Length: 381
Image 1 (spheres, helix red, strand yellow):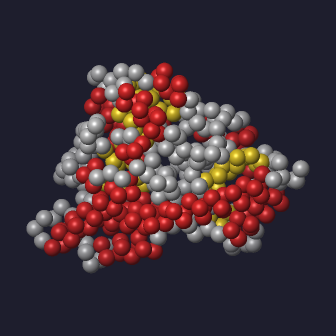
Image 2: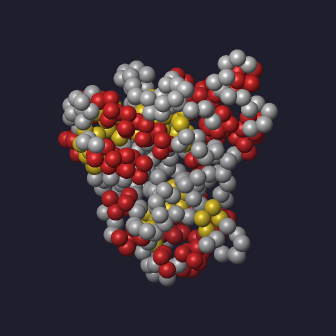
């Protein structure tokens, strides 16, 4: 790979801010810098109107109503708000939360904290394809379950879970169905009502918006989800999360939702072409295989085990390639991916697996350069 040529294939970690998104945000740093809570003058009115529009845009990409959207600083905050809030709200009668071993650390670490607080947490297994056994879920969920929390799209493998079936099981037992939808937004069509999701989270920087802003969706009816105040103060966001709203960031989130909806049809086809080309080239030498199901997954994500490549010994050679060996929230190579281990891979297989996540700015020429690079590192069969 030519020196100085950096190829970015880590779009599940974060994405470049779209130019339309940036242009929408800029005036709210300078010209329209009012506080959205300032109700007595035009600066505040303009900021409040911008937040209203962004709430509508965010609701639209999820196929829900604006009144069900609350802004946060991140998806991690939304996950904490939901799980901690559900436990506080329902633990007296329903003290069980069911989740999965392959969830993002934001879910797993919050559940471990709640376990220490007395909650009963069930961590379900997945199979080699990264999928949950629906019969195991049915056996686990009962009338003591307050919430079932299952991510839609896995951040490391791109595997998509059949949420509607899982939501039905949760609802039959009176439990809330929550999903970490962070990686799916902007990549596949979303209809939270159709899937039966009661709580979902959004993070702008995963689909060409700014970092430091996200949202949580809370269903308003059938069932109505009520969470206690998470941050106390001025009562913003319907007293759920106090604090001055990040108006430029919220504007960016809303615009990113609008732009993503416009790109959605072409995005899936374009990303699939890049992913298929990468996998065909890397797996053709018989020293590589794709981790997770190849049927139901994100169009932009490929997690490949390069069995004969000692990745830890070749990191320096990859300095001009932005990729990941797991979640961006985990320390690089400190330990093998918990997702891949839960899927049944050995430590060596997990250590020798790489996540490639494509974005709108990647090209087929970059795929050629990357596959040539890896094929030169891996001996042919």
